[in-house]
Image (cartoon, rainbow, N blue to C red; front, side, top):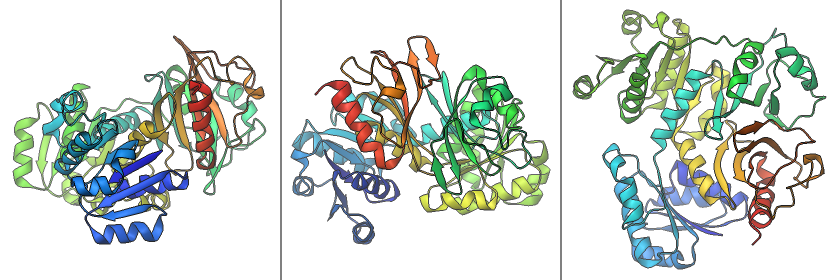
Amino acid sequence: MKIIIVGAGEVGFHIASRLAYENKDVVVIDKDPEAIRKLTESVDVEAINGSGSSPVVLKAAGLREADILLAVTDSDEANLVACLMADVISPTTKKLARIRGGDFDLYHDVFRDNAPHIDTIINPEIEVVKTIELFLSVPGAVDVSEFADGRLKFVGLYMQQGNRLAGIRLAELPEKIGYRALVAAIVREDELIIPSGEHRLLPGDLVYFISEEKGLEPILEGFNKQVKPVRRVLIVGGGRIGTRLSEALENKSIHTKIIERSPARAGELAEQMRRAVVIQGDGSDQRLLVEENIREMDAVITVTDDEETNILVSLLARRMGAAKTITRLNKFSYFPLMRAIGIEQVVSPRLSAVNTILRHIRRGKVLSVRTLTAEQAEVLEAEALETSDIVGKPLRWTNMPKGSLVIGIIRKDQVIIPSGESIIEPGDRIIILAQPQVVSKIEKILAVKLEFF
C-alpha cells in the first residue's frame, strides 16, 4: 500500500511514523524545509520539500501509483486544492482531507459527490466534542470509546489506592461487582498487559474494560466512581471547539458558561449562544473563577488554542474545587506527562484525526479504529465474513496472534462479551484489541481471510 501525506505537522508526522513502523510505502510532502528535516531525522520515509497543491510535486511523489492521499496541512484551503489536483491527476486514488472550518460543514457531501471527490472529510473538532460528551457521561474515565453505534463502551479507569477491588483476580471481578465485564488491557508502569483471569488488579493500574451501556453503573461503582448527572459546566476558550461544545451542551439542557479572553470574540459568542452565559475575561484569573462559583461546577473544560494555558487552568480549577477537568492538548509529547501532574482526562483534535485516518487506511472491513491514550494498542471494529477461518469455531481455537484479543461481538441486536468458548458467525461485527507489533497481522486476517482476496 502506497500512501502520500501532504503536511508534515503533528498529524502528518505521527501518521507517517505509525505507517513506517508497519513497513508501508509512505511519501510525505511539506513546503517547510525544517519540518521535512525533522521528519527525515526521525522516520524512515521518503520526504519531498514542496507544495502538496502542486501537480508537479504530486506527480513526482508518485500520485498515480498511490492508494491513498492524506491532506492534513493546517490550511483547509491547501488541503482542498491538494485533493482537487489529485482528483485531476489520479481519480482512482482515495482522498482524505482534514477540513476544520465550520463554514465548510454544510459542504462535506458536496465535496464528496463533486470535484474534488474527497472520499472522507476529517473534522477532528467534531470528534473532540463527542469525546468530551463521553467523558462527561462516564465519571472518572481517562479514556472512553463507543462501538456498535454506542451499545458497547470501552473505558479506561485508574485503580486507586484502597479500592476494594485491589488485589483480586480478574476471574473474581464479575462476582465482586455483580456484572460481567471483560478487562481487555491493563497498563502497569507504562507496560501494556493483555491479561488472563489469573492476573490481579493493583493500585495505580490503568484498567481498560468493555461493557454494555447497562453494565457501566455497577462497574463504575466498583471502581469507586460516583455516578451523578452533569448539570453545570464551565468552558474556557470560545474558539471553534468551545462553540461546538457549548451548542451540544445547550441541546442537553446543561447549564453552560464560556470564558473567552478576546472582547470581540466574546461579543460574537454572546449573540450566537441561546442559553449559555458568555464571560469576557482570563480563564486563569483566580478572582474570576471564584466569582463564577467554580466550586459548584461539575466540570471545567479547557479548550483554548494554547495548551499551556489549558494545562494551567485545569490544574488551577482542580485546586479551587472543581469536580472534574477535561483538558485539550495538541502535542503528543505532552501526553505521558499529564498523569504525573494530576491531569487525567485529556482530549486531542490531532489524536482524533489520527483515529479517523487509521480507520480508512486499515485493510479489510474496518468500521472504526481507536488508539489507546498511551498509544500502546489499537481497538478495531470490523465485520467478519463467511470466508474467515476465525468464523465457526471457539475463539480459543482461532489463530489470533499473541498481543491481540477479541473483546466484543455484535450479532444483529445482540451484544456478546466474549469468552474462549464464544463463536464468531458470518456477519458479526467484532471488536479487536491489538498491540502495535501485531496490527499488520490483524490487517492480513481482516483483508485476506475475511474478504477472501
